[in-house]
Length: 344
Image 1 (cartoon, helix red, strand yellow):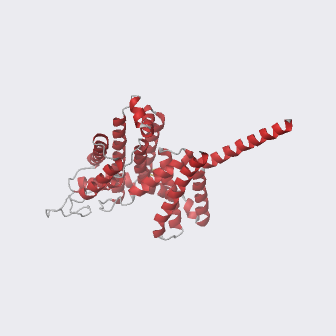
Image 2 (cartoon, helix red, strand yellow):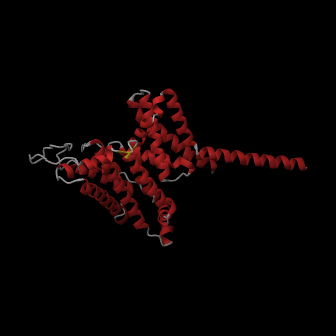
Image 3 (cartoon, one colour):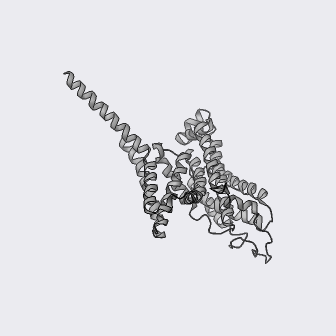
């Protein structure tokens, strides 16, 4: 009978090792796919791996990653912010209006736009926490409100130097060169400032959400709000904090876009909502966490950025990009929730 027991033990050990290997592959699947894409695109187009192109990818996804980090915080408390794209677009218009029409400089413009984003976050929190409006409905209403509001001061026109105002006068302001440095300058001529801002936001929010008591309470609120409240957690304040962070980061994204293009374009931010949400949801699959996390969101943004940049360098039709992003998102969600269901 001893050999039978040995065979059973060996089988059990083999099963355990196989399960460990599968779990490791699940946790690292996004990184494996990312590395595979980098290698594949480099073989097909050697210029892909050029440092300037890699920095260009990071710069392109920096705004999406910043907005996605805000979405991640609202997801942590069990909410969802649909207004971030509109807040970012309004931030672009507000920054341009403050400098072109009001004639203020960068040191006044940046704080004012960030305060605007925080105020929108507070308004969302008031609707959701105090008036008990479902988060999707509240932030959807805010999205429509801001989409219309940003067009009123200029009668629907984009903002640039020499803008003709609705009263017939001409704006005399210009973009502050210091403001433009936010979107156009690089550290040591290599690392773009937007990439540094993205990294700073990611590090601060990662520490906040993963290494502090506030972060634990944010996830506890999203997991079981009633239990967290009964345990003494200030759930209303935590939800308000999440939406204020989201609004502020969306406004920061708007500042980066305005500084990069040097124009208050009424169509800016059109795709930012979907791209940032996609990054946040792809992040669920990173490291097999199956929950919102800032690190995963940044990786998700980079993943999509690498994919789209590589396809562009290979001259893939532009109209296939949305399909590719959708396919990647579906695959990430299937990897996340399909694996969880299999394990159960």
